[in-house]
Amino acid sequence: MSGLELEDGLRALLETTLDSFEKLEIVRTLLASGRAMSQSQLEDGCGLSSELIEDALPGLLRARLVERDVVDRGIRLGIASQDPRFVALMQLYNEDRAGVLAVLSSAVMQRLRSMAARAFADAFVIRKKRDGDG
Image (cartoon, rainbow, N blue to C red; front, top):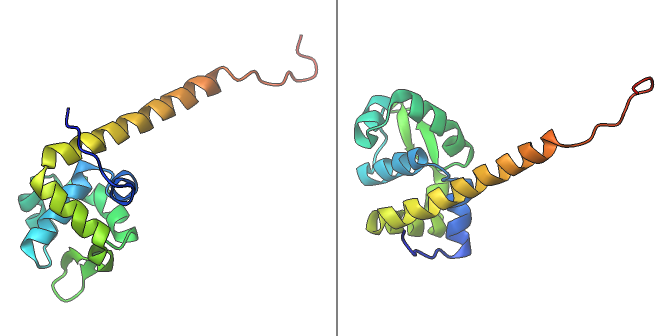
């Protein structure tokens, strides 16, 4: 496993906004193209299905990393893509894709462990007995 260490700002961006492989690939493809792309061009460029792209786009739009281009009727990088943390993370992703994906995978596994622990704990919460229950 890669020993890549990310500064806190980059880690936070990766764990909150660019929290999936699909999101990383969409913005990487848009950054590499330097222009707005249609969904089918994104599919070809990313190698992702239309469903995966459709699932990832709302989060990227909310974060303003991408926006809809009304002239070209496509998707392009948004204003938040000018953030130095985003630029640094994408440069690192291009240089050490495996390292960035290892950090992302570790964060995803931690989220899953936390969710499983909460679900397990919730299953064993003792409910207050109702009147009439023995």
